[in-house]
Length: 359
Image (cartoon, rainbow, N blue to C red; front, side, top):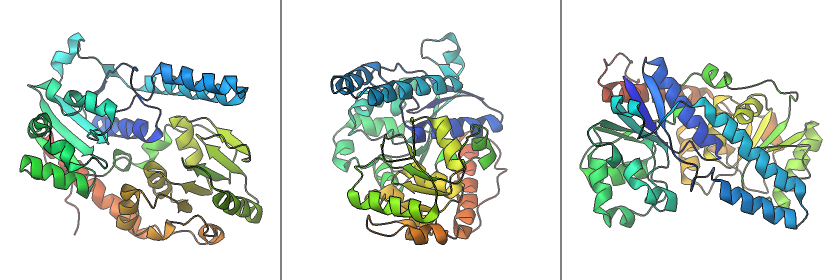
């Protein structure tokens, strides 16, 4: 089958890139020919103009290192995105697409201007006449009033032959709008074996370090706790994606480096959804500051890892010395993966040859 994935892979976000990669690999392993919908960079997270504006602001402040950081990030993503086989709506081969899969990620967050402007794409209305499936889509925190006030959204959702979402909030709204059952599916990065993600990684010179993958204003308290951990453990601190002059090394935001450095970390400090997922996948001790993010809190609760949630003044030494017990998480991954693969195979009309998850 020839499948087109519609998602937000053209943004400088490691999670968005890696979920698209993992979903494509999953479908390829099932024998399908997979493409991603080509979208122009304009108005995406990889648009050129914002990079020009952002780097210019740093240049006039004589912060040339910060300006170069922005452009290095841009070109890393430009290069990384070439891994995806893309297909445009005007390409001759587009007519041969058998199925469109929308997702994963928060592509139904129609409070976001880019997604609202392109809702016909992310609701599949642009692909009338082709089978449409959603995989692990989230509406994020979009208020129900946004959906209720736009009949086009209801119409688009009802056009899907099968719907899966990523969280309970999304499921409740989708089921109310469509009157149909929606399956909760796991993030695509949990669909694949770890070896598939490892294939992206490259060798790194450093080993045994503390990796910071968090995007928040670094408070003095949290910085002090991280430096206490560094001194007590003797490990370097590497900041990924955010420049922090007090760290031993700063890495440009790059999805290939993300996998490479998470894989080899001794400890991860994060506040993101995919930082949490990859800490679990690689079974690293980690401290999670995503307590205000519902999707992070729900994920950790489901995997019996809520103890990794930290307040800024919590000591990190115990978190390093007493790693989490990942036994329940391993079992949960197996269960969620089986259920999600079964959804995909059934939605694509294939045999139900994946074992039902044990209850």
